[in-house]
Length: 459
Image (tube, rainbow, N blue to C red; front, side):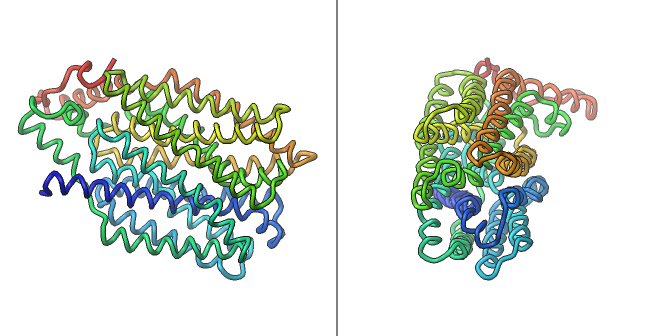
């Protein structure tokens, strides 16, 4: 057993490495949007074909995510994250030389298969080092790896493409991925919070922390059909789907929109893209702190996590709709920035609520299921925007039609989730289902002492 001080440092080393893992993950995603214009020129791609390239990334994304999620219930995340990073690095190198449209599609499909499980496994690995009451900030840091990936990708990959060519960007990403894999194999480690919390609650059920006992009181396992029908998890799925609609547009079409829709140069578009995604970093950290503050003050998770996230997705939809009005280019950039800030909060608070509601033994699988099915939005949104752009009499008008449609979907999802999400009610429901199932299968058994709902933040 590691000493507490050593364990604490090891936990933050893992957080730092997982942050870099997500940084590389999203730089890999963003490169297509940044290279869109020169690739279209060199390979003779139409807007519709570019949309297919963006959507092809998600062909195996969901399937891979679900498969790895169930594997994560039994295999250490250290090895799973290493496998994923090797795949990411390997598929970049074929794009360094001569590239055809089929090869580009194939590499993006394989990259999607490697990146499908990434965020769910990254969060699952982090949660193994922190209990529920201490997860806000580590999750926010890991999630900011996504924003930093796009923030760094904007100027750095654009610089490589301007001074060399777009092939150099893929070469750089492959090398960086290989370096991260070596660091992770040397320094990465598996946490044991779930196991230690269970042991602590068994040995001293009245002296352990509120958060540890709350997690122990979660049922050991429930039928997956109970998870699939739970209103909170359904609401989180709706928000996650909406968030991926916005995110996939961000890394596939935002840079191209800045150039083709608003008329900015390649250099300006690269820097503006970095500003847009970079603004989400302080916004997410501030909202994470605010949510943690409310949670510590006894505000329910429904309010401190659910209301914030539902409102954020609805506001993202409204910012997209505002893009279709007669406002000037600077205000449209403000709208894109606000949308990037609000739209990504689901990737912070969604996993927190899933980790709160689902049994630890099924958490890895459900995080992956939610993430993988929701990312089907990434298969739809880029291709759909490509169709709008290609069908309109001008590219700028096509972008406006796409933003109007997708913004309306986001507003509807935010309103529906506001009514559905109630983590405290879901925890009571799932405990009841597990208790009833145990009674039927093994007769009346003694359940571990649980805190009253008020003590666990229910309300």
